[in-house]
Amino acid sequence: MTKKIQDIWSRWLLERRFGGDSAVMQAGLTKYQYPWRDKVLSHANLQEGEILLDVGCGDGLIAFGALEKVDTSRVIFSDISQDLLDHTQSLAKEMNILDRCQFVNTSADDLSAIENASVDVVTTRSVLIYVAAKRRAFQEFYRVLKPGGRLSIFEPINRFAYPEPPNLFIGYDVQPVAEIAQKLKAHYERIQPSDTDPMFNFDERDLVSCADQAGFNEIYLELTIEVKPIPEKMTWEQFLHYTANPKVPSIEEAMQEALQPEEINRFTRHLRPLVEQGQGIRRGALAFLWATK
Image (cartoon, rainbow, N blue to C red; front, side):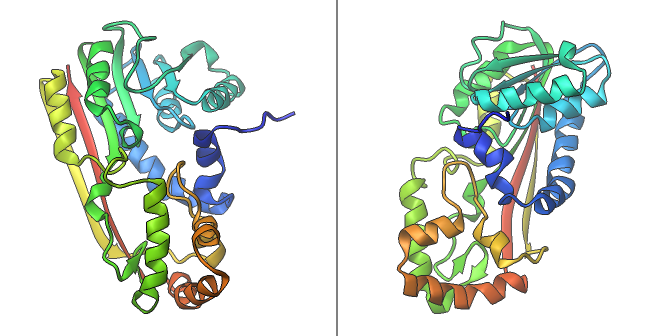
């Protein structure tokens, strides 16, 4: 019997992130996730026989990529989700690479289960956006690295595109139904307040500052900013099932929670054609940081 997924992290990563649509999942992996993984690993410069600690390993994208990239490497999968660790451990068993893996249930800002100066590389992917104590996390990354060890991380900079102007909702022009869109935005804001939530309390300069203050003596950061038409058309169902992160409801759920039936109908009549025709603008910023101890 398959173990029931229980925590919010595994539910989102393995189910809700792609709305249960395997085609959307594969397209997202190919277009975005794999290139991000490859860049993180390129900056990590993992060598034969080295140990990589993947903090917030999630579904194992970075960790399994490292095991594939360097045949003699060893990887420590760490995450606050035991469900995800169980999932990745099962995958490692199926791949017959358990002897090269270790699994540790711990948070990014408290890696006390990992000894001082015991790993060659630390990686993260979209982890610090969930960590309030970011400076403490960088201190932990520095502590567990050996002298000359490398840090390589990827983080979206959500502050860049937030808050959206009143006439936009996830990049679509909703001026004729702006008051309805505002009710949805306010609902999300109540669940995930932008003035206190760690997803919004930093930018690329803060990442550099954290690395610098932690003691890293060679720091690089690459920032990519995009403002462009939404490149993929999607069905209305795919849009409704979109869930931005593990802590918030899908768009469909938020509409049911925050709007009256007549408002849902009106909002849908306006927004659905824009979504299905791909008439929106995507704004985003992504940061890759790599550093040496």
